[in-house]
Length: 229
Image 1 (cartoon, rainbow, N blue to C red):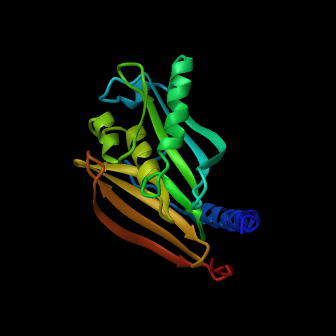
Image 2 (cartoon, rainbow, N blue to C red; image 1 turned 90 degrees about the vertical axis):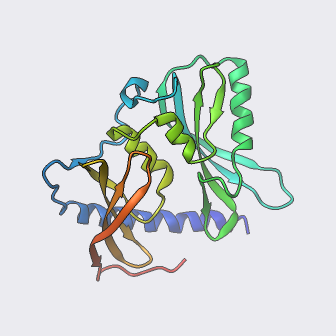
C-alpha cells in the first residue's frame, strides 16, 4: 500500500490547488466591517510582541511526517520549521532534548496529529516546542498548555497562534474583530468534496473557548466537480 501514498498526495495537492483558487476568488468578495482586521499571520518573531505570560525566550513550530504502522518503529521524515520566535543557542544537550521530543510527542491522540486519509498509520505531526526558565526544551502536549503560556488571549498574534494550533476544519481564519470581551473571527474555506464555499463567524473568549458560532455565507460552486475520497 505504500506506493499508493504518493498518488494520494498528488490527488490531495490537485484538490488543494483548486480549493485555494476558489477560496481566493470568493475571499476577494469579502468586505470587512468597521473595526475588523485581516489576519497578518505570524508577522512578528519577537517574544515581546506575543506578550507570553510565561518566561519564554524561544518558541518554535515544526512539522514532520510520521509513519506509525503497526509492528514498525516511528519513521519520521520531511522535517520542516514553520515558525521561530526569539533565539536560543543550540547546544548538544538541547539537540538531544529535541530529538527525544520529536519521537515522543507523536501519538494517535495528540492534538497536532493530522492523518493522511485514508491511510490511518501515516500522519503529519505539528509540534509546538519552547525553552522554559531552566533553559530546557519542552513541548506543548495539551491544548490548555497554550493558555498557561499565553495567560490570556489579548492580541492578534496570540489569537492567530491559538487558532492555528486548535482549529483544523475546512474553513480557516481570515479576519477578526474585538467585540466586548470576545474576539469575533471570520472563517472562510472551500470544500473540494462538497464543492461549496463557507463563511462563518466564531466567537472566542480570553481563554480560547469558542462560545458561539454562526454561518453567514454558503455558496454552491456549479463549475466544480466533487471528488469523493
